[in-house]
Structures are given as structure tokens and as C-alpha cells.
Length: 138
Ligand SMILES: [Zn+2]
Figure 1: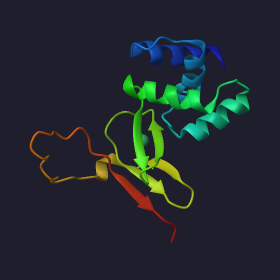
Figure 2: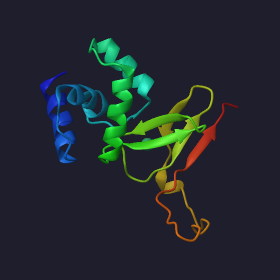
Figure 3: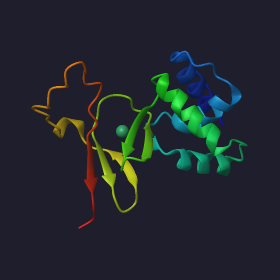
Figure 4: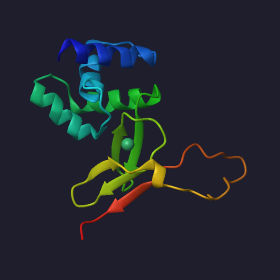
């Protein structure tokens, strides 16, 4: 982890009121250390951690990703009802889901136009709308 990566990771955590423990900072540096947005799964982040040689368990990664979501640092996108992706870009934007590779990428937000969505049932409000466009190669 370079000093710049460490600084970005620490600022990202403290900016959301999350205490930058050594483990959280290590994971945050893999998520935002290079200053780019990314979509990860717990498994892909676990592979990256193992490549770097950090002793972090998959369970810890799951718990940390959930904590980062609760702090508003990450946006969780669920595909196929079970596969969770975590996005460092928490702004509203649509996604492409590549069915063959399981990759989740950003779709151009300026090309999406939602003209009407169903009213929320009585006693409920719409918390968010996730748009995932599934792709297969021709
Ligand atoms: Zn995204």
C-alpha cells in the first residue's frame, strides 16, 4: 500500500465517520486507493487481499463490506437474488450485467430515461430503484 493509497483510504473512511482500523484501511485501499470507482464482490475482494498477502478472512470481508454499506460508503447491487456487488460509486446510475462473465459495469446514465414507476403500496415509500441491464454476447 503506497502512502497515497493509504491517505485516500483513510480519508474515505473518516469522511463517513468510520474509524480507520488497520484492517478497514487495508480493504479500503483496495476499493478506493487508486482513486477509481469499482464494483467488487466479497470473493473478488478476498482474492485481491490474498494476492497482497493480508491475513483477512472472507467472513471479515463480508462484514466489513456490509458495514461500509451502512456507513454509505458503498452501494450494494444484488443480481440473481443472491450475488451481491459492492459499488464505490454511490450515486444513482444504471449497470450492465454481463451474464457470461458475471461482470458488473456502469452503463451510461445519460441514456437512461425512466418516465414512470409504480406507486409504492400504502404505508411504504420507494427507497431506491436499481437498474441492471443484463447482457449476453451475440
Ligand atoms: Zn456502478
